[in-house]
Image 1 (cartoon, rainbow, N blue to C red):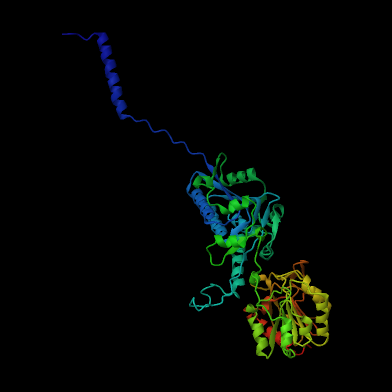
Image 2: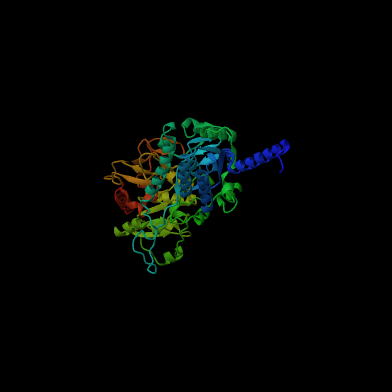
Length: 540
């Protein structure tokens, strides 16, 4: 029998201790290490260039959604250099930023330009900073009017607006509703910070960053580091890293047409805008400064008149005197399209009159010598010769009627003024507007002040569309109120859009005589009175 020696006892104790420690260790699990909290981040969303494509809209909205869902991102800085674009894209990004700002602070930094839709995006942030010499504002809407539809028997539709979708007469109010949407967004975002009225903002002015600060359109002036620090302050973080949101959600170089055109310094064409739009009638929150061919409304195409009969053949036919005939000049590049003056021409015929178009090459002296009732001249784009002016002046002195219709939206006034000044009248190249009292938009002015004259007696209200002022020592037939402004002088005053000097009638707008605008307010009544004047009714 072996005895346990002290040495063996010590070894046994050590073995038991080690075994016990192993058994105990098998039951012991140390706590897992505490996870390191990720460093907070500030997201950067760059909105540069035109707002044109679905790719841009979807990328911006995807970046906003990423910032909302990513808990590491504590705030977002939106860097803006944009003149705007399609209204729908600006609105989508604005509402996306408002949603983001309800969860995390959003600061907008204007780097160069936030005009129109660019500013609409900016007011989606809770705080707006701009560089001192950046441009901010240009609040407003531009749009192209719906076409006047001529129906076809080969294409049938079930309603008068099924094809166009809109009434030409009501379209100004649709544009005004879009403006009100823009103004409401500015008012909601800026609220009591604004030091300027919404009426003033609706003028569409651009402001330098320093002036925008005074007006309350922005909160501070500063640059990128300052804006970044402001986001961190609002987010309550001191240490952070920066995340480019566009790079985080996709390839930022694919399909960004607006950004590419902007970087290339390309101005937009209406054709390009229409090509990228899927809307039936597109509204733009876009600075017109970046448009190179904004259309001239109903006259953005050239009407081609059929070839006329040579004057020698007319004489060979031994034409009788042109009694009750209204000559309409189309020989001087006149902005006259008979398709949309059907009501006026129809009234002339209805009242027993005749219409003769005076084409190029026709001897105006010979025609006026046959004693027509009147000569009607719409916005010429070519000058009248001294001989023509002499013949027209003699025609008027012998009792003939002359009606001069000029539309400042269609041509410069120099050609018609060379004739109008012979009769003490001069058309301005500017246009009249009234911010408060208008038909849909500021350029559609309402006239309620009339002279006691056969041509205006009984009228209570006319609506004129981009009319201008007539400088004259003759009789004003219609006057604006004192809130109207002439664009050339930017002064309020009582202006004259319609005047008469004996048997010479001057009208400083043509649109209100067109179909269908001649049916608004008392425009139709005035058109009838003009028809009577053309056919020889008393001018006094």
